Length: 211
Ligand SMILES: C[S@@+](CC[C@H](N)C(=O)[O-])C[C@H]1O[C@@H](n2cnc3c(N)ncnc32)[C@H](O)[C@@H]1O
Image (spheres, rainbow, N blue to C red):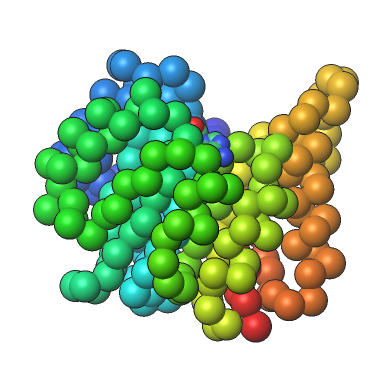
């Protein structure tokens, strides 16, 4: 049933386009843990959020193969930019070759390194931040980006339901990534500086509005 619904949704929303389909395909063929790639539905959602929020500057933590960065860039008005940070330098050639094939390549600035050291070197504030890196570091990444997002801006965090493990560990011991997500969700829930909602889409997306 769930698969049928997924297929139904994908056949009734915008297509992802040839370049993103190829990127998704290449990610599955050549890169470890391809499930981390945002993919068709989440990619279209990210683009739609950008259309709604109309940010000028976006910060992404966790580029992986560049799928979400391309979707965020696609939604921007002319002159907008995405700064995306990836710690794994082995992904750099893959990311650059796919991003450079996009008509939105000039909107995307790729930074290779640990977000904790790279983000402070990027000038200026952001209207939207997308947190999608190591789940163990979500609280630290939130604290890192929060002062860089302007009042009235948004932070979106991915995977905040973590395959349902936030409520049911399925008999397994609490692992570090689940603990990181639990800590993050509690931190956001008690942060009175922001309004927040969790969308139960894909693996859970938390949308945070900085007051
Ligand atoms: C879930 S993937 C990102 C998926 C991508 N945003 C997308 O939607 O297609 C997480 C990525 O974050 C990167 N990462 C992990 N820790 C990081 C850090 N401290 N700074 C920057 N990138 C990091 C990982 O190497 C991995 O490529």
